[in-house]
Length: 441
Image (cartoon, rainbow, N blue to C red):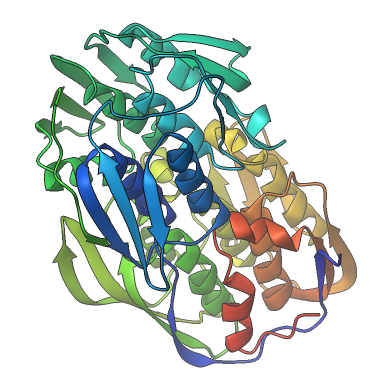
């Protein structure tokens, strides 16, 4: 099967509107919380990617009824701690670190051992970051140095904990939060700033939660709960997916784009702040609130001259999934851009900090790379004339899509492998980019 693309022509100017698929983070979180509610929850615009479908498959194995229709998904929750499953059950998280880490939080009360597995990429990622706090609740684990496969054996009496999350990982924070609702008593969390979708969903579900937002940390208190009402939810469009088209427009000539109904949660808009710092015209229109989330349309215009940026690390967590794209912007800027405290990038589907440098080097852009930082020496007039091959990146969907954006905006002849990697997060990526006029073989 042909699983590669060849791009040899830049994209021509465009002026379009585009609707992006549903937010992956919210799709997975909604599904997991709906499984804990008592009764039918319904979502609209659920992302139908492999990561989300893996979530639904795991819930089915745990005795939860799910049903996908054309535009909706229904989940019949059994209530908190009410999973029903066979002995020696195996749950496959596929490529999804979000699913793999979050579902462990829901299993601290499991009555018999449950085995979690994943694909080759996920099996290389660190799960100790969630195993350690979940052990404090009373759950027991078997693994090889915190890597998949993992066997979790829950406890009948999980106890509340005090937890310090110092990595800025929303996955770690959420895993502990999900365990907390299965626990009698008060769990307290001091968490470095990260995405707060779970906190917002907790408030919507009336799960007892108190949050104090400080400059660098959030302080969260959660009371154990014995009942959650079903939640009907319209999943907003994903800014992490929209970012590919935002950067495509920025780096293309004489182009304009309007993205509809994007989730611009303040913990997710680092890419917008960075673009503005680099001199890009980007506007937020039709702003409104939906169940605690900020939703808006995003208007973007191409920009011929970009300013370099020395990014404050405090913005890192708000654009952690967009850094490969941000590196492309830095490659076009006039001057040196500097990004630091990025060790978390190498904990993703592939070592993304390393891959970001590799892609730029193949493009003729000089970089200086350390274990957690990168300097990028921008070349505003860089025109690629050679052939570039991108492969061996552990099927990381963001490496693939970033390479497509680079090919369409910097020129050259690119052969990019593992096209199917987009199925994990953004299966309609190729069709949407072709509606803008991209020529891809």
